[in-house]
Length: 307
Image 1 (cartoon, rainbow, N blue to C red):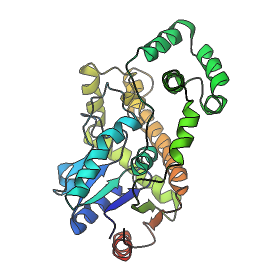
Image 2 (image 1 turned 180 degrees about the vertical axis):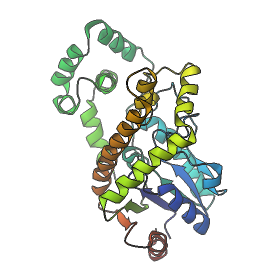
Image 3 (image 1 turned 60 degrees about the vertical axis):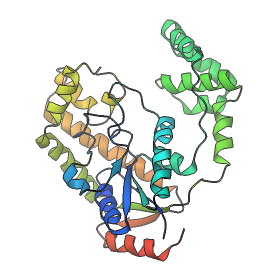
Image 4 (image 1 turned 120 degrees about the vertical axis):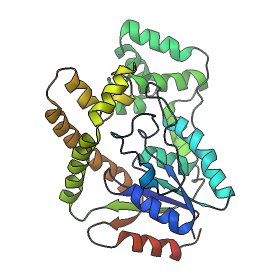
């Protein structure tokens, strides 16, 4: 039997519930793979599982950062990697569940991330961007690494600066680093399970319902408490879908009802992007929620395959 199971899929597809059922049955622990559930005090808007939903199953990589901290794929892997190894060392099944495809793929690959040394170069780049704007830095990146520049937008200041920092620190472009990393075989060979629906309309219905339930559960009050505690409205965490729209409404830009409709629309678009990402994985075993008993099919796949 596989000792690592990855459960992927779009938002509101039921990944957490399936992860818990499989963990109960196969002696597993869950590693959350969600770029927003890492933040403390951001529970409702991230659909973080409650204690009742966890059903006593250990869940890792929840509440590991403060909302005003920047979080990255490299930090996720640095924290989740040792947890994964510990679960395996104890003879347990590691169930990695979530919708952040980049985090999940990077953890499974065991990616070697470019270093984040404290040499001051990043601060120098930040100061230059503040002083001159991001365009000169983008022009510089285009000369050094045209491939990276072509896939970045001017609004993506953080990644533009990161690409230049990697080059200055290592002498290697971030494109070259990524290609070298991708050529290395994955560190782990999990069983991949992907959740989806036969009809896209059913996924969208569940997304819309989830937003309505979040409002009933007190999402607006959660956001107000975060802002009142001093969390900057422009920080990375508060720019996530389900937060930035209500922050704007609380600032007088539209009603809460209009913000909810925006969240629903943005979440539907995000779900499409998630599905596009996961469909590229040729090892994915798709479980179609409204067509089959997904728990039974997952059980069968687990029992049929060996690591």
